[in-house]
Image (cartoon, one colour):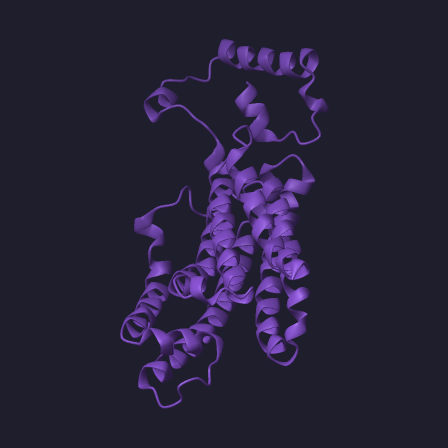
Amino acid sequence: MFLLVISLLFPVFASLFWAVVLSGDKKNSNIPRSFLAKFMFLSFLFYTCKFFYHFPLPDIYIYFDVFYLYIGSLIYPIYHIYFRLLTVDEKFSWKAHSKYFILPVILVSIYEVGVVFTPAIEFKASLFDRNAFPNSPQVHFLNIMRGLLRVYFQIQLILAVTQNYLLLRKYNVKAEQFYSDIKDGMFNNAKKLNLFMIITGAYTLATYFLFKRYPEMIYLFPPIFGVLMFIIGYMGFHQKRVNPTFDLEVDTPSEMSSIQPLVNAQKKILDKLLKEFEEKKIYLNSELNILDVVKAV
């Protein structure tokens, strides 16, 4: 029993760890990283619900089932929005991004209505035994909705990773031209972030089918999810924006328009550059990029 608890809690703590680290690193904070922290917190809630289900704690899980499906239905859309913040969107906006939440929320809401009209005993039994109450129309409806949501999750995964790949390919040249550090320009972390989400999604589907035949593998499945979440968090922690122009802090348009390309102004900028490189030796920073130089000057 102790090993089962440790196994089930591993992804819970891995996602919670990165939710805290990503949101607490104020020095290197940016909008995508802050949003990834929210993704990790939702993952923490998601794996906590799975803990209640597999432990098993049926008397507790029945109150979390609908909540668990709401979170699960939003995981892939939120991960795609994270990639949009890395590439094409300046900040999160309900007006711009709510379209990714509408269909999953509608589907889970329909399931929730079915739960409300299902007797508590039948609902609880159907959660842990899909063959329970075969003559109950309510249980039959819930089973259909669970199957539909499972298929929809797979479609979400395919759409999210495909759209992420297209965004990364689109902003390839821009990142390579902007960052002085070739590692940042190649944004290998971003590519791997998308790859590991594919692996996580495929592994989720594999565990669903394998767990039915080999229930003892419950000791193996959650730790691997924990490792995958830890890798995603680690790479997200080090990932800079693929489209970095949103992070550039500039003055207001009126202030910018008043700046004239005078010789003395150019000399002043040059003096600041020389001071940063010769006196402060900022070039010793192995992660130095153009943004750092601009902000320093």
